[in-house]
Structures are given as C-alpha cells and as structure tokens.
Image (cartoon, rainbow, N blue to C red; front, side, top):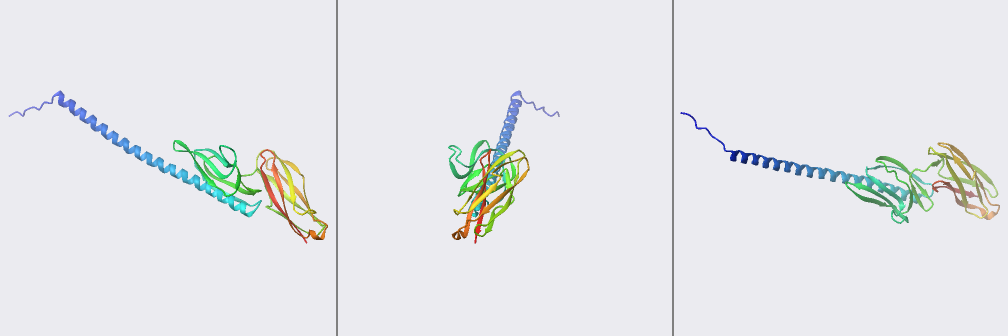
Amino acid sequence: MTEPKIRYSAHLRAQSGTEFLMLAAVSLATLLAVYIVAFSQINSVGTIMKSSILRQSLDELAQAAGEVHSQGIGARKLVEFQLPAGLNYSSVGRNPSTGAMIKTIYVNYLDGISLTHAYASTGCNVDGLLPMSMGAHRVWVTAIPGGAYIGNLSYDVDSPSVSFILSPVQSKSSILKVTSLVNVATTYSITETISGEDNELDVTPSSFSLDAQQSINLTILAEAGDEEDSVGIYFGNITIKESSSGINMSVPVTIEVG
C-alpha cells in the first residue's frame, strides 16, 4: 500500500517563513535590549568611577592646601593623585565665570556624553594650575601669603626658612640657593621685609635670570638695631617673584636679637 504524499501549499510555506522572520526579529530585539542594558550599566559604572577618582583627587589637594596654610608661609606638601580622561577645564581659586577669588578648586569634565563639574572647598585662598592629562600626577602645594599655591613652581629653594641669632648692632649673612625647575630661561625679582624699626634685611642680587636647570646663591644680610630695646624676636619674608607669571614664593625669616 502506497503512503499518501503530503503536499504543502504555497500559503503554508509563506506562513512558516513569516513566523521564522518574526521569531528572528524578536530574538534580535531581545539581544539588542540586553546589549543596551549591559552597555548602559558598564558606562554608568565607568562614569561613577571617573567622578569618584576626580572628587577624591580634588579633596586631597584641598586638604593639603589647608594643612600648609595652617603651618605658615613656605610650608609645602607633595600630593600624589589620579586624574581621569575627559578633563575640559580647571580653575584654582577663581570663579570660572567672573574670575573673582574663591576658596575652591573647580574642574569641568566630560561625564559620558555630557559636560559636568566637580569641585572641592579649600578653606583658604588658593591659586595655581592643575595638570589636564589623564593618569598619575605629583604636584607641590605651597603656603604663600594669604593662602596656598597648587602646582609646581618654576623654581625651588634649598631651605624652607632662614634664621639669624644676633647681638645688638651685629650683622650676619647667609646663603639661599635658588634652582630652576623648568627648561626655559626665567627672570625673577626679590623683595624683603623684616619687623623692627632698626633691623635691616637685604638680599643680593635683587633680580636675576636662570637658564634651564641653573642655580644661583642669594646672599642674605641681616643686621640688628643698635638700641637696647631692640632685643627680641623679629619676623619677615624674602619673596621671590617669577616675572612672567607673577607667582610668588615667600621664605620666612626670623631674627633673634639678644
């Protein structure tokens, strides 16, 4: 006995093809939805990590600024921190819109697909520059008159302070070594102050230029007053000003007359 042949109509074949296409479309849509959700979650985690790294870095710099400011002019602290990719703009101690002095470190950065910002309050006036490249950075935070400077200066000194012990009318000299930290020639000027009407403080030379990595010895001459009532402890500063940027570094000076 011969088995009957099963014949499929064109209608049934078309229906099967349509169902297959619908099933494939649903599967593709499901996979796409899963991919979008997974990508969004990964992107969200990356955004949170970037924000966390940046805020932690700004907090560390702000804390260091407060620490050196409380210690006095000339105090310094080396801060190591990480910066993420996507930094767009930074401002240390300045309102990004008006330029007015503020006690804040501000950074504008790309957070995913939009620009946003992060900031940290310092508790004291600050000035300076932040690096803008991604990765690990090391910068000095230095106490200056009225606040702190964040960023690497173009020069360094071999002593954070200078002190003298003198008798009335006596004078002594000391050497302060200044070294260039940059690869270009830079010009500097010196000003000095000391308390006590009869005391004198003089630094030579009063201005100088340093080539790349060059050093110079400044001669500091301190002279006590000739009056008996000049006995006491007096304070002052030697201020080194970088001519091109106007950035100052102050070295505290103490004269004890006895």
